[in-house]
Image (cartoon, each protein chain N blue to C red):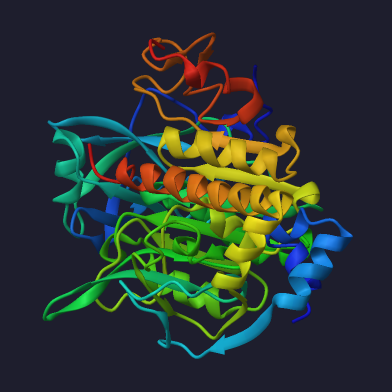
Length: 284
Length: 151
């Protein structure tokens, strides 16, 4: 199972050699999540990427982690990552300041389908909004490629909703439908409370004509994929993003193996039908 | 109230045959709520049940001296007010409109009497209530998993 990657991989000259990138902006999204904008610090070319791809981000003296690129693919001179502080390396990234330098390898992995000529239904949960944000940027920059574009997003609480200003801006646009829900409401929250699946119906996209992009916790992706299939989205048009313990990023070390595939090169974006049965096996 | 629009959003209405549809339409009245308007309050008598035609309602629990807490929101097509079918026929939650909301309204006492008289109708309504309750239980279980929590 190998998806075609449309990117010219010759831009990744030395996949095991990190390039220095400098922090040029840092934004707090929630109490434990930040977004960093980085620029190349070696005078080299910008990092061209496709929506859905990731880089390996190296903090000197601490370690390296895979992070999905969350920025605009049409503005590659700024490399953007959204990071939740959950471990040693991500806490070190969380603590970076303006002008700090990290090492970047990549981009690696497969990309989201473009869905040209189809309705684009995007369902994201929690930090899963980060890897699909490039898809939204691209869809809005080329709005004539799709009949309907819709985002259904679920977060734990209102204060953990990512990209709040952007969500408001997108919600004000007539050419994209945005629905947001939280698992638990807070004082002042006037939006939906509950799971993300019922929101998909409100997007008013045509199920039979849709490409569905799902990103979030695997349990959530499984449930959403099944629900979308039951509601008429063609199963071959449902895509998910699977994270595994990526180390080399280029399919050599085997850490990210998932059945017969390496998620760093055969993923992270995969058709749901290709992994559906494997997601039920607890020992993989 | 004309229920034709509800065929697309309500599983109950979508599953009605022509005679059943005519019966439901003859019973349904319509109400519209403004944002923040309360449809029914926790522990009130469940004299009616509803189908959401358009809008979003919050199911809330009221707390002494504190703002109420929303536990779930319901949108288009939702069957609302399940307590009409289950003793002691008292609302378990408060329902408040979050947006301008239009609902089809049905008289609970009349429907219970009709269900006693007509076993087919009785089965239809129990099926609708069970499916709505099952859907909400499934959603609540997913919420309880706290999928988006760290770790």
